[in-house]
Length: 305
Image (cartoon, one colour):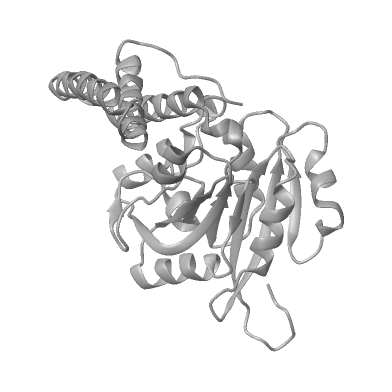
C-alpha cells in the first residue's frame, strides 16, 4: 500500500477476523488499529461476517472503510469458510488471526511481525491472558484456565490456534492450505491447518511477548462448560494429530489416554476438598484425555457453530 507518492511501498499485514458481530468485536478492531508495527509495515483488517444478518456492520458502525477496515460476507455459519473468505480477500504477506472477543496489547502486531522476521518461521503463535470477573471463584483465579502459553519464546510447535496466530501467506499458498470446511462447525480447524503446515515442513514458533487479552464471562467458568471445552480439545487433537497414526501408535495413545484419565480423575476427587484449584486442574486433564478416547471409539466432534 502506498501512502504517499515516492515513498517505498509498505509491506502489508492483514488482520483476519471471523465474526458473527458480537459487541466485543469493536474493542478487538479498535485495539488492532492502535497496535504499533515495525517500520516499513502497514496493516489492514478484514472481517468475515458469518452472521447472515450484517451484524458485523452494526457492531463496527462507522469504522468500515476507514483505516483499512473491510468486511466480507460469509454467512455460512462455518468458521472455516469464514476464515477462508477473510484470507481470500486479504492482501498481506502476513495473515494474523485473532478472535472477536479478544483485545490485543498495544505492541501485539509489532511483536508477531518481528518474531516472524527474525526467525524466518512460517508461523508465530502468541499468548492469551484471560481477564477474569472480580467475583470469579478462587480456584478460577488461581488456575486461570483461559490463559494460553504454547511454549517458550522461539520454541517450535506442531499445532497452533487462531486465537493469536501469524501465518506467512507464501507458506500456505505453496502448500495449497486453507481451513477445512468439514471442521467449520465443530472447531479444531486451526489445529488441523497448523498440523498440516508443520507436517509438510513448515515451522511455527512461539512468541512470549505477542499478547492478547480475553475477557472471560462468568458462564465460561462453570465446571460443566470447562470440562466440555477440554474434552473437545482432546478430541480435536486426536482427530488431527493422531488420526493417521499406525496401529501400534494408536494402541499406545489409547492406553496412555486411558491411564492418564483414570489417574487424573482419582487425583481430582482426592484434592477437591483440600485444594480446589488443583482438583479442577486434574479434572480438566481427565476431560482432555477422555476427549481423545471418545475420538478413538468413533464419537463425532461436537458442533460449536
